[in-house]
Amino acid sequence: MHTHQKLLSPLVTPSITFKNRVVMAPMSRRRAEQAIPSASAPLYYGQRASAGLIIAENSAVAPNGVGYLNAPGIYNAPQKAAWKKVVDEVHARDGKIFVQLVHTGRIGHALNHEGHLPLVGASSLKAADIIRTPNNEHHPMPEPEVLTTEGAAALVDAHIQASIAAMDLGFDGVEIHGAHGFLPAQFLHPATNQRTDRYGGSIANRSRFLLDIMEGVTAAIGKEHTGVRLSPFVGINDLPTYPEETATHLYLTTALQQLGIFYIHLSGMPVNGVSTISADYLREVRQRFKQLLIVAGGYTADSGEALLQAGLADMIAYGKPFIANPDLVEKFRHHTPLAVADPGIFYEGGDTGYIDFPIIHPQPEINTVAINS
Image 1 (spheres, one colour):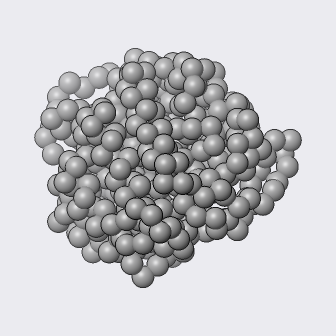
Image 2 (image 1 turned 180 degrees about the vertical axis):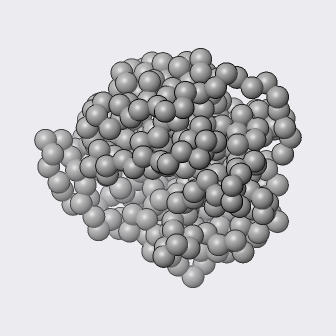
């Protein structure tokens, strides 16, 4: 394929016009000491503002939801002040930016939390993994404390309050992280949800925690500013695939259509060159969900264009390619070979491997011509 006509064309919605259909996926870069985005974060995101949409890295809605060492939060004043600088820089460069809101639940360690607060989860099952903590130590993830019904409802409210804060800071919207084995996914999954209250048991009850968040956020900031990320069939963070997974996610999809949220962002993973999210599954989602569909998971410019041309997605999200290619969109446009980042600097390294990649194609002047989808 020699043209990326649809990938690089604007997308007009009733609330937001995107200058192209390339999304910078939310990537945790873990350079936020004390969970405060670094002084270099505005430049990092600003360099990548040629994306049609930036989804800023997952940001904790509460001190016990940070999870990973040096991941950011959005629950206190210093964090919010730092994020405001990011938003202003992206907007100054004609970019659009949502922020991904997260609570990592059982994924993490108390040593990475402000005040060393313990992990919490839908149930007491701990994750079978090791995590980095201060002083470059590594520890097994502890058993989480089980959230009470009231505790779960309080974390629903924490997402709502974080979404209000994000809009006050000028973000164009928020994406709720319902994927990758974090807290909402722990409620969804029958292995980590052994509850007997309103949040446990049936598909509807296991979906309730995430849907309560989505309902509360849409009521607080508007459905046109609200998205969600889901990762069916991926099995990240010690949550294997399960027999009811398709039924669970299609139930969610139908419920999200009823809420009228702005988009669903599906995160897949290529396995032997084939995405864990199949074309058949995308067709099922398209039948149920009529708003925007963003798809991520190892796509190239060509394969992303093909998915758009097939009508199976509205936007394509790119993660790792954006690390070493701040001018990714223009490289797609000019068919310029992509630089490859060193995985050793994905999650640490300060400014090295963060803001020091060369920009071969500076962002062009603003194009005011819009093309409907």
